[in-house]
Length: 222
View 1 (cartoon, one colour):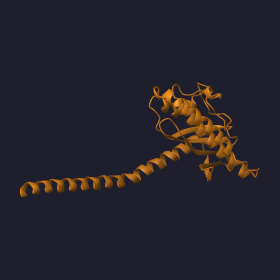
View 2 (spheres, one colour; view 1 turned 90 degrees about the vertical axis):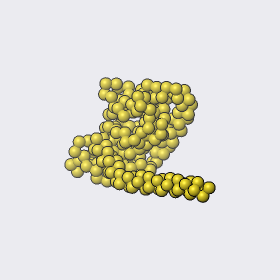
View 3 (cartoon, one colour; view 1 turned 45 degrees about the horizontal axis):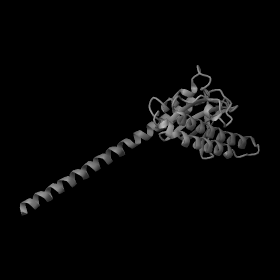
């Protein structure tokens, strides 16, 4: 009986030691790779900022406006636009992007930083809305007015096929970015600083309501 108890204790002790060693090894690997992961994220972010701004533009000032980060850009001593980080909840989770605007608040380009949308459907947000061959879905060059909506919601932007929720979330993020940009521009030009939170809230409420209504219908498609 003593021998049996001893064997059982030894087995439990061995399992505990193995678990502790494994946990320690995983923690060590995580710590070693954390800096690399963060460095890669920073590089991706910096590349995205350059991709959405006019060629040769240089970041002059970084500000927080309406909870979003705005990167104001200069070229040859003149303001040429800004890149704005924004996000909204899509079908699979947060969609994080950065969008560039020129000095006239027209959309130059956008880059998706992170998303969890369905492969082959919602993940088309990466390129769908900047397809120059499809004017109905292309938002580049448009004068941003904070009210971009898919056609199903009365707007003039063609949603991604079978991925309306992802499309709504993407456009909401763009609208939020515009609101932050516009507030920032008004503040710097000395104009009356009208807060555009109402625009964001209206877009958010409407699109969230429609997303809730349509999510069950799209669940089988996306």
